[in-house]
Amino acid sequence: MSVSLPASVKIIEVGPRDGLQNEKETIPVAVKVELVNRLSAAGFSNIEAAAFVSPKWVPQMATSGEVMQQITRKPGMLVSALVPNMKGLEAALAAKADEIVIFGAASEAFSQKNINCSIAESIERFREVAVAAKAHGLRMRGSISCSFGCPYQGDVAPDAVADVVKRMQDLGCDEFDIADTIGVGTARQVQQLFERLSRDFPVDRLAGHFHDTYGQALANIYAALEVGVSIFHSSVAGLGGCPYAKGATGNVATEDVLYLMQGLGIKTGIDLQAVVDAGQFISNHLGRKAASRAGNAIAARETK
Image 1 (cartoon, one colour):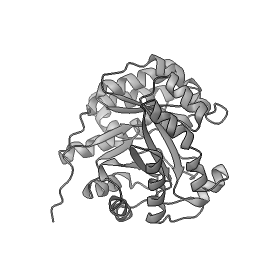
Image 2 (cartoon, helix red, strand yellow):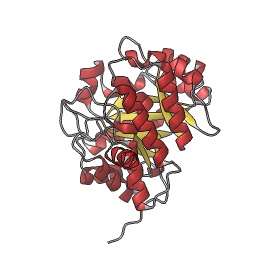
Image 3 (tube, rainbow, N blue to C red):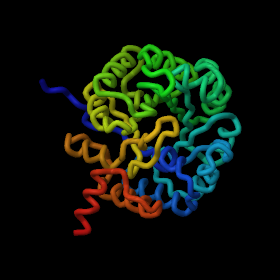
Image 4 (cartoon, one colour):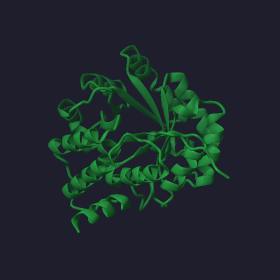
């Protein structure tokens, strides 16, 4: 049975924010700027580069304003920033972010454990931020963590995810990140969830955000492609991790996703070789091997 896959996809690069935020050693602004610029030059139309959060909680993101000031912005490129509150929004506006990212969880247990309030309350807290963001003409994404499973409650029902998407849609979000925060999702589960969501929401506004903890991320992306999803998040060199799941790896590596898309004949508009080089650059700075199989294989081929 042949399945019609999207002819092209949008890949949102989240390494500079989601990937680097867990690093213990402070990464110099110049290194972060070069990473973003390399990724921009590779052809990404959307890069998540900053988080305007309390430096007490995420010290690595304390230099977000400086990074945003110094990066090279190509025409038409969206630079995104995570924003938790009005203070964060004001910083994002000052830094000329093109898009803000607000966030919630699909798991009630996760919401209570992490921010001591219900899902409904957590999203309602963003109402003021959403109104102000729209008044300033900003694009807004809603990120929904634990959409496929939770470290505290286990399975998460598709209807629970749909409820959060609806709440974020009501706030004015333009796109919805369906995130497998701890990487437990499987291909059939992915298809069932996106099929459920696409009954109520346009599939071209739904994005897959997969972590590779159990080695299922590429299979999950392919499963999502089969039901019409055409937006995916990835992290150069597989940067990142999840503090809520022991042994969790980072987001799926961008190089691996690009290699998959190239093999499927799906257009991305992104130069795989340039991304491999960017992945090797940041991995060398961090003093460890990249977590991208395709990236490392391509890089090894060059050094022979």
